[in-house]
Length: 253
Ligand SMILES: C[S@@+](CC[C@H](N)C(=O)[O-])C[C@H]1O[C@@H](n2cnc3c(N)ncnc32)[C@H](O)[C@@H]1O
Image (tube, rainbow, N blue to C red; front, side, top):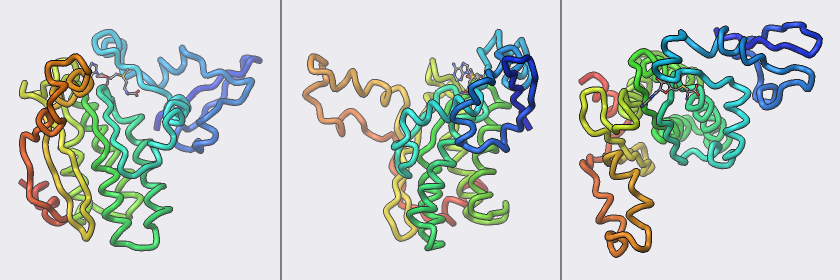
C-alpha cells in the first residue's frame, strides 16, 4: 500500500497510509505538515527513475487528486458525467471519480438493488482513460474493478463483475493519447454508453481523433460550421441494446 511521508516544520516525519486517509484529510494537509517533494517522489509516487525520464511517470498524491476533483465537484458527483483521462497511469484520478459516482448512486438508488447495480455500472461506463504503459493500464482496470466490486459485494463469478470487467477493457485503452492510436496502431475508439432503463444499455462507438475536433468543427468560421453535430459525429458502430448478462457474455469472447 503506498504511504505518504509527511514532514512537519520541526523536522519530524510521520507516515500515513494513503488508503486510510479520509477524503476530508486528503483535501488539506495539516498547516504544519508539508509533504516533502523528495519523499513523495522517492517513496511512493514513482516506480523508477527511468520511467520518470522516459514517460514522465509521476503519480499524483491522493490529497492533490481530491483537491483537483473538488474544482469540478458537481460533475464528479453526477452519475452520468463523462471523464476521460488521457494519461491515466494506474488510475489515481479515475478511482476517486468512481468512488464519488458510487456515493451518488448510493444516495439516489441505494434502496433498490436493481437500480443500484445498473446505475453503478452506468457510472463506471462514463469513465475513460488512455495509458501508454501496459502494466499501468492493467493496474488501472484492476483498481477500478476492485472499487466497483467492493461497493456491490461482487465476486468474479457474478455477471455484473464480468460486465464491469468488459466495460473497463473497452473504456480504459492501452494506447498513445498523442497519436490517438491504440497499442495495435489502430485509431482509438471510445464507446458512448447510455442507460435506457429497465436493465438495457445502449452502445455507440466513436473515433477519439474525431471527438477531439469537436470545438474546431463548431467554430463559426470553420468549413464545417454549417453541418449539424450529427453529421460530424457519426458513430463507427452502433450496437443493439444489451443487458448486464449480455455484456458479461462479451467478456468471455
Ligand atoms: C505523470 S503520470 C500521471 C498518472 C496519473 N494521471 C496520476 O496522476 O497519478 C503520466 C502517465 O502518463 C503516461 N503517458 C505518458 N505519455 C503518454 C501518452 N502519449 N499517451 C498515454 N499515456 C501516456 C505514463 O505512462 C504515465 O503513466
